[in-house]
Length: 538
Image (cartoon, rainbow, N blue to C red; front, side):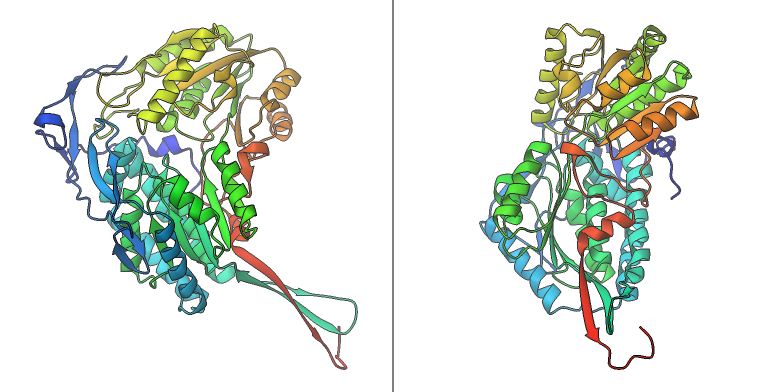
């Protein structure tokens, strides 16, 4: 897939008559009742649509088999549209992590995967990518159902990206090699790039399948084995693609998937003495805990992709209509549940008032509702905890005397839907301008000149991403080089090509995912030095 803004993929329509969607006649709802709800500012009466995809995989994947948790415990995964139970999923804990790590260690030390030719590993990953495309509708339905993101977004943007990422890393599998190094004296020196071993991976709930691909793809390409813990809110698609990997021919124990909670399964994985590397995506606070657990166990290297509070800077020369639409997308995409969301919208004072009015009008037109319905732009937040967190920040914005231009409330009385919310007259010291809200709340701040906005944009503990909107190449070059962020998008946002590295400065994490740089996370470099006796040349 060529590099493109995610929103360009979302322009494709989908059919509500898909075989994986059907009108609910009481299934999965309290008392069999039919729910009709009015949604937000662009309101439409709508029935809850029940996906007819079958939830077939709810057990842990360990050593090539789907098994119950050792304790026999399960936990519910919920539909964020209604709060109702979708399925009960095996609740893994420390004992299950031990079983999974043991299987991964055996597969790495004794199994065929790391000893397989890189070309054969590549072929298995390509077969998996083909299966992802074959089952795209099932995967999109499960992802939307479990997470609340729109079916259209999952089907036309995210699932194709998953397949593309695995094809990208399949292409790298047989191109990983070391060097021959000249050295002083009669020595032959070579470097070997070896798989690091058993990789522990913990993925978040906002992009379950994409984060699965970002982590599993490079780890497999390098010849590692994996123990992956899903987010407890969204475990269903990981198990489904685990089944697809088995169908593609992946040997037992190479990929193990455990669902469970962070304090038990996650902590056990991070502190496990037989895990050689750890990768985590999630909040900065949890990332600190993960790093400590890894350091206090076996000093395993850790890759962290953490929180953000990304500035989106609109200069006075900008086309305001285009800037408003891009800023809207940068913040509200995926219900605002995006670590790199452009959640601090800085607008030059000369165009500030016009921008605010048009940003408000755009938010009022945003269509909120059942994510399975065609034309819906925004579904529910993932769960009640996230819903309450966002509402707390909205109250904080009001109490801080920011101007609430629109939104600020719940949509309907069932599920976790929040009105698209816009604040103006936001100051840098307000919580809504400092903390990662992770919801549909746009904060618009005013600035006067380039030096000022660079300083203010960088005055944050985060450094994940930034957006710059200007017609001036000089301004774009100056500001993009000055911003302390891992990704700077100029006149675009959320371009996530497989080859583009992604990661943060400061407390947004360390290491990079995607692209060639991510391979370094899963390789060890070994120097091999051999004496040369009477060499013809050195």
